[in-house]
Image (cartoon, rainbow over all chains, first blue to last red; front, side):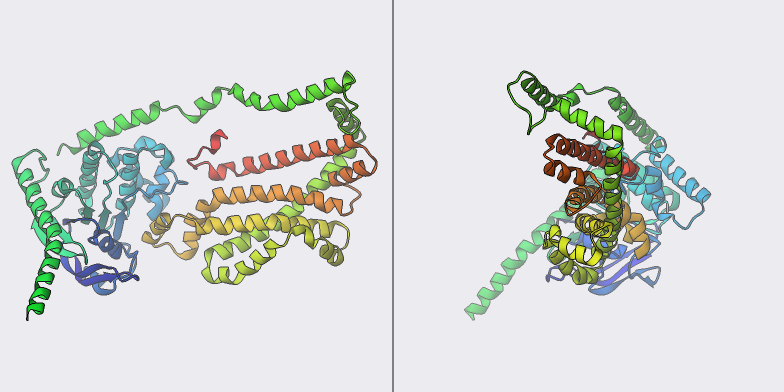
Length: 262
Length: 284
């Protein structure tokens, strides 16, 4: 179980990226963080990954307070971030340093089969397409069998067809070990396709606006009515979250006007 | 779940597309005749000059025609003089290059990887770099004598600075995003240096070494000007004092060939290290 308690992050320049985040993600659950740009989605992910330090509050994984990168937490970035000097095979094996050669080979080969790139094992990353590179990046995160997998808009740079196929690959890998997944996205369709729960966030400062359970049965039919309804619900929440901050200054002005009146 | 079927179709589709792309061996098989275009200008000028001297339009005493230069080279090669001089020059460059490059790599790595060390080392080294290296010559002669040590020291100084700057700069410009991958997999500082920083700086390190080698050849001439009885630089000085422009040009050509050979050797030796690079270098 992954939980955030009063989590806040203020950058050195005073930007309040996150303010008082409280959220619990259950084991094996897929949670989509969704929201407009600048609402702290990526910051939250970087805090869980241990790449940045929180300013206040804590993150707990099964009761243990996370401080810095944790072996049970894996991350897939927005870009593939493969090491260009390693073959596809070695890139996937990058995090498996402590294991025996045989174990390494077995795990990587299995992952390659799952992502359908067995015949590309000995190629350089530069020889792969963007979608293939991102698949390798997902495999690299999965082979260490993380308890928590963080996905930072991993499909945002890809075209719609490649994205749909990558969703399948991702769910295929997820089915095996069922890790807890925190997915950052700005694509509502993607959130509804993958997640058990959508957490809508709001900017300035980044905070949670609403949580929507997505209880559709898997595999999800993207053309069905229930899917459409869910998408609409998330879109509505998102819409409200984006409108809310503009209402605030209005209220502030009203208060100031009232103060002047008196 | 319909997943596996669709995904299989996708992967084989993309696989086929990747296989259909021409491989590098196929590309290399076609010889590009335009490479020969580069030879046109120098060969044409040489032939014109040769004709001008042969038909009496020019005297060719100060600018000897190609045939005289080739004859001079041939003569020097026959007596074995050419090899003695070339070997001497090469030996000086090699020793100076090794000393300069090694110290450049070590100090560059230190200054690139630690902020404190950079603030300690870099200002001094930058100040020293501002001194024209030839200005050291009198001091080196006083300190190290007029023989090999002072010459090698001058070459080492010339090689050191580009290597130092290149290595330190390369480490500082390593992509933060790749370093974060190392952090996520909890690499120690040493592991991070070995598994991410070192491979990432190799391409720029090779470029730094090449420019260092180029400067090494520049400084060996300066070093040999300041008093040598052997070496291609000596052939130059001797040619000037004896009024033999053909000997000077022969030495210059020998320098050009040696420099190019050494550079190509370095390039071939380091090629396996940077084979993964996704650049146009392969076509250059």
